[in-house]
Image 1 (cartoon, rainbow, N blue to C red):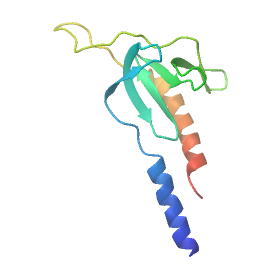
Image 2: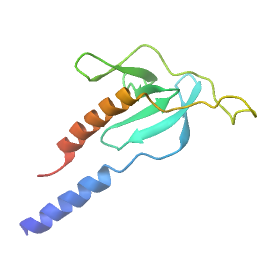
Image 3: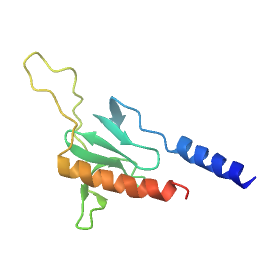
Image 4: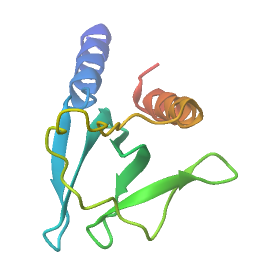
Length: 123
Protein backbone atom coordinates (compact mmCIF):
# COMPACT_ATOMS: atom_id res chain seq x y z
CA UNK A 1 0.00 0.00 0.00
CA UNK A 2 2.85 2.36 0.88
CA UNK A 3 4.49 1.73 -2.50
CA UNK A 4 1.26 2.53 -4.35
CA UNK A 5 0.89 5.83 -2.47
CA UNK A 6 4.51 6.74 -3.22
CA UNK A 7 4.02 6.03 -6.93
CA UNK A 8 0.81 8.10 -7.00
CA UNK A 9 2.60 10.98 -5.25
CA UNK A 10 5.45 10.90 -7.76
CA UNK A 11 3.04 10.83 -10.72
CA UNK A 12 1.02 13.69 -9.22
CA UNK A 13 4.16 15.76 -8.68
CA UNK A 14 5.33 15.22 -12.25
CA UNK A 15 1.92 16.13 -13.67
CA UNK A 16 1.65 19.33 -11.63
CA UNK A 17 5.09 20.58 -12.62
CA UNK A 18 4.88 20.32 -16.38
CA UNK A 19 7.02 22.37 -18.73
CA UNK A 20 5.94 25.83 -19.79
CA UNK A 21 4.34 26.26 -23.20
CA UNK A 22 6.92 26.94 -25.89
CA UNK A 23 7.13 29.61 -28.57
CA UNK A 24 6.69 33.38 -28.53
CA UNK A 25 3.52 34.40 -26.72
CA UNK A 26 1.72 37.72 -26.32
CA UNK A 27 1.05 38.83 -22.73
CA UNK A 28 -1.51 41.51 -21.85
CA UNK A 29 -1.14 43.91 -18.92
CA UNK A 30 -4.23 45.04 -16.92
CA UNK A 31 -4.14 48.40 -18.72
CA UNK A 32 -4.43 46.65 -22.10
CA UNK A 33 -0.84 47.11 -23.24
CA UNK A 34 0.89 44.02 -24.57
CA UNK A 35 4.36 42.57 -24.90
CA UNK A 36 5.81 39.39 -26.34
CA UNK A 37 8.14 36.88 -24.79
CA UNK A 38 9.09 33.27 -24.23
CA UNK A 39 7.51 31.46 -21.27
CA UNK A 40 10.13 29.27 -19.55
CA UNK A 41 10.27 26.86 -16.61
CA UNK A 42 7.47 24.76 -15.12
CA UNK A 43 4.32 25.42 -13.14
CA UNK A 44 6.42 25.23 -9.97
CA UNK A 45 8.84 27.95 -11.11
CA UNK A 46 8.49 29.97 -14.28
CA UNK A 47 9.47 33.25 -15.89
CA UNK A 48 9.17 35.11 -19.18
CA UNK A 49 12.11 36.13 -21.34
CA UNK A 50 11.32 39.34 -23.22
CA UNK A 51 13.80 41.48 -25.14
CA UNK A 52 16.70 39.94 -23.23
CA UNK A 53 15.18 40.60 -19.80
CA UNK A 54 13.54 38.42 -17.15
CA UNK A 55 9.86 39.15 -16.55
CA UNK A 56 7.75 37.92 -13.61
CA UNK A 57 4.09 38.39 -12.70
CA UNK A 58 3.30 40.51 -9.64
CA UNK A 59 0.17 39.14 -7.98
CA UNK A 60 -0.22 42.34 -5.92
CA UNK A 61 -0.70 44.81 -8.77
CA UNK A 62 -1.50 42.18 -11.46
CA UNK A 63 1.19 43.55 -13.82
CA UNK A 64 4.21 41.82 -15.31
CA UNK A 65 7.47 43.47 -14.18
CA UNK A 66 11.12 43.24 -15.15
CA UNK A 67 12.97 41.17 -12.53
CA UNK A 68 16.65 41.39 -11.63
CA UNK A 69 18.95 39.33 -9.43
CA UNK A 70 19.86 40.85 -6.08
CA UNK A 71 23.09 40.32 -4.15
CA UNK A 72 21.73 36.98 -2.81
CA UNK A 73 20.96 35.74 -6.34
CA UNK A 74 17.20 35.85 -5.79
CA UNK A 75 14.83 37.49 -8.25
CA UNK A 76 13.46 40.87 -7.25
CA UNK A 77 10.74 42.71 -9.15
CA UNK A 78 11.49 46.23 -10.32
CA UNK A 79 9.03 49.03 -11.03
CA UNK A 80 9.78 48.67 -14.76
CA UNK A 81 7.35 46.83 -17.01
CA UNK A 82 8.31 45.11 -20.27
CA UNK A 83 8.37 46.99 -23.55
CA UNK A 84 4.88 47.39 -24.90
CA UNK A 85 5.95 47.04 -28.51
CA UNK A 86 4.46 44.04 -30.26
CA UNK A 87 7.04 42.76 -32.69
CA UNK A 88 5.68 41.38 -35.93
CA UNK A 89 7.84 39.45 -38.36
CA UNK A 90 10.83 41.69 -39.08
CA UNK A 91 10.99 43.43 -42.43
CA UNK A 92 13.53 42.00 -44.83
CA UNK A 93 16.98 43.04 -43.66
CA UNK A 94 15.73 44.36 -40.28
CA UNK A 95 17.32 42.92 -37.14
CA UNK A 96 15.13 40.38 -35.34
CA UNK A 97 14.27 40.71 -31.65
CA UNK A 98 15.95 38.17 -29.41
CA UNK A 99 14.22 36.98 -26.25
CA UNK A 100 17.33 35.09 -25.16
CA UNK A 101 19.07 36.05 -21.93
CA UNK A 102 22.74 36.58 -21.17
CA UNK A 103 24.52 33.38 -20.12
CA UNK A 104 24.99 34.61 -16.52
CA UNK A 105 21.24 35.21 -16.14
CA UNK A 106 20.46 31.82 -17.65
CA UNK A 107 22.78 30.07 -15.18
CA UNK A 108 21.25 31.88 -12.19
CA UNK A 109 17.73 31.01 -13.34
CA UNK A 110 18.79 27.39 -13.76
CA UNK A 111 20.06 27.34 -10.15
CA UNK A 112 16.79 28.85 -8.86
CA UNK A 113 14.79 26.39 -10.94
CA UNK A 114 16.71 23.42 -9.53
CA UNK A 115 16.20 24.68 -5.95
CA UNK A 116 12.43 25.06 -6.51
CA UNK A 117 12.24 21.67 -8.21
CA UNK A 118 14.01 20.02 -5.25
CA UNK A 119 11.30 21.39 -2.94
CA UNK A 120 8.61 19.64 -4.97
CA UNK A 121 10.43 16.35 -5.55
CA UNK A 122 9.49 13.58 -3.09
CA UNK A 123 12.32 11.72 -1.43
